[in-house]
Image 1: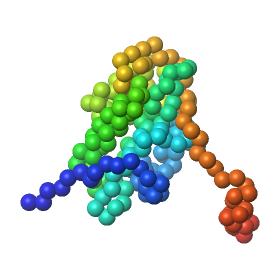
Image 2 (image 1 turned 90 degrees about the vertical axis):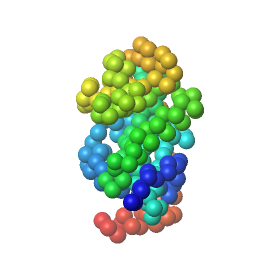
Image 3 (image 1 turned 180 degrees about the vertical axis):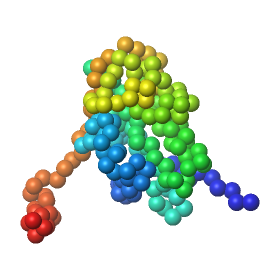
Image 4 (image 1 turned 30 degrees about the vertical axis):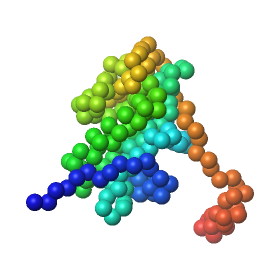
Length: 194
């Protein structure tokens, strides 16, 4: 009898990023995932420090990912945004998604965060304590399904009376300057392809 267990979960490394992007494209389709309203809260931002997770298969490739991002749940109310959560099709039904969720919630709690928001399948996320009632006074910067906009309090009362627009607050991704691109030969590459 072959026993297969879920791969271990670790903090994401810089080396995981390209594989993470490929996994997200496989799971959701590139155009579809980049069009999501939640993506507006992530683009150009770094994930929350110590809250980006990856799981690697036997060959070392990323087979699951989950990140948390800094946002506000209305004015001056810090929270985290969860997502996306993705598991490679070959590794589904091993409890890896649930293990990533539990790891992320426990670590966010340990780090002192008050609440987590997400857009996702309510029946799936309810087992972790997420509830649509936590987000009734909040809205996202774009179209979203109100029944899929869920919240979880890590600290009691963290979302009490939360009202307003959810906005990104995480550290911006550092982009190279024009001088750095030229020094790397990026400008020359662009000229040749024009």
